[in-house]
Amino acid sequence: MTRLQRGIRRGAALGVLALALAVEGSRLDAGDSGAPVSPPVTPESIRAGEAVFFEYCSGCHGRRADGRGPESLNLDPKPQNLRNAQFVKHLSDERIYTSLSGGVRGTAMPAWELALSAERRWNVIHYIRSLTADDTIALPNGIARQAVDPGMKNPLPVDEQSAAAGRKIFLSYCASCHGQKADGRGILAPNLIPAPRNLVAITSWGEKPFIEYLADARVYDSVTNGVPGTSMQPWIGVLDDVQRWQAVCFLRFEGDREKKARSGEPAGTN
Ligand code: HEC
Ligand code: HEC
Image (tube, rainbow, N blue to C red):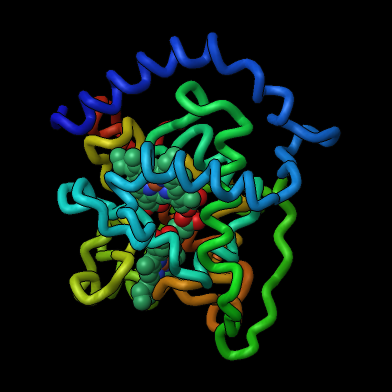
């Protein structure tokens, strides 16, 4: 464990204490549908969020929120640049709230659920949104986004066959960035900011491959519509629906193999 990770664990332990003191904000956690709903944005909430940001977030994300805080030098993947308007605007309130509350598993982004009340988490979201509020963004090449149902499931079985078909697609279209092993080390990777995602290799930040933390709908959305503000392009006009799911099958299969290799089990036995 690095010093930073130990620090974060210690921070989480202190957070348990904070929880007892911070119940005041918990009623803001969920709307009627169960999905988190933002309270109204006010100049006060933005100012309060700015203070939270400087205290808890700027060490990694930087005082300007551009991803270049002092801790960022040691991190892989790097903290997101929260002034990247395309990227921030494509994130729903629910996604940001969930990432803040539970962290981004498999990366250094900590969970803030225990350390920050729901009210303070919303305040910092209001602050983050205020940084790019005036930026107008152009969507890439006029490609229409495909709406993705959050409950969507992979229609294909993850097995040798779908993974073999997906591997061919991955090697042709994805490996230049993500690497042949989907570990984020493709030949183009050193030139890209943010770096292509390590999708499969287990790092010190997670017990599982990154891909395993993502629901089918999230992976499908990113592969179909791309990740705006990064070099991850939409693949909807390039690969058909079955091919995109096959690529997902390949990633899930490799992720499973990686996990089993770690625990000494043979691959492909579930
Ligand atoms: C220990 C370093 C660290 C700290 C402290 C930290 N972050 Fe992060 N944050 C990260 C990293 C690393 C990522 C990139 C994760 C990835 O690659 O998806 C990230 C990602 C994010 C994202 C994007 C989430 C998504 O769904 O893609 C948001 C928003 C964010 N951080 C906000 C915050 C806020 C607000 C705070 C303070 C309350 C904070 N971060 C504190 C390291 C940190
Ligand atoms: C030009 C480089 C590039 C290519 C080619 C590329 N990607 Fe990506 N991909 C990225 C980057 C950069 C990110 C990370 C974005 C971020 O920081 O959130 C990413 C992220 C992802 C993610 C995670 C998305 C999420 O929701 O967090 C998946 C899954 C993925 N890519 C799959 C693929 C697949 C499958 C292909 C081929 C069909 C592909 N990528 C081709 C650059 C690329």
